[in-house]
Length: 277
Image (cartoon, helix red, strand yellow):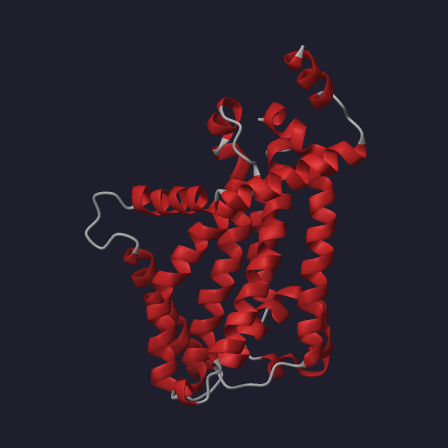
């Protein structure tokens, strides 16, 4: 009798019931953050198993890219290296976190299809897995961040607390985009290629390798670029630059509206994701 009642209840398809189940998934996923962290660390470790430097290979390759682009663009733009190198380095590191979280979000549910079909783990656990994996990578890249801040002398004027708030908002926004990409990719396997192309386009349209003032009279269009605000909220405080109030308004609004809309989509599609896989 209890089994039949359970089957009847779980078979309900009302919007309110779906929303309740989605909130239950969210609550249970928070209770399993330790599992998400363990899965993320295992992903990073297994990717570099047998390597001498391990995950620091990412840091080494990124460091070489930062040096190459920093020296080249500083010469092309005729800018002091101690000013431009930290700017480029911070841009590459933190835009890389956004790119990694969103691009890897496409495979969030696809890679976890085995566990999702055989266990009752909360689906959002695997979203936190993706976020934590990129947070671990950021931890390795902090070597580059500290080095360029010391090289440029910005460590004297940096505001780590404000930059931490920027990182938090960056992760909040990247995580809902990652979840949305994961849901879409579970249904349509062309989505990862589309997302990858969009992110590749975005890095060149965002002041990562160039200064905002080089945009000239078109600088106003930067306000329409969400990645500019996400990057500026972190890079600005680390370089002792003021962050405009409207940047914080944009980021908070994006986080609230983005998570609200994405969570409603998740609530509606949560039961179908396993079938998509």
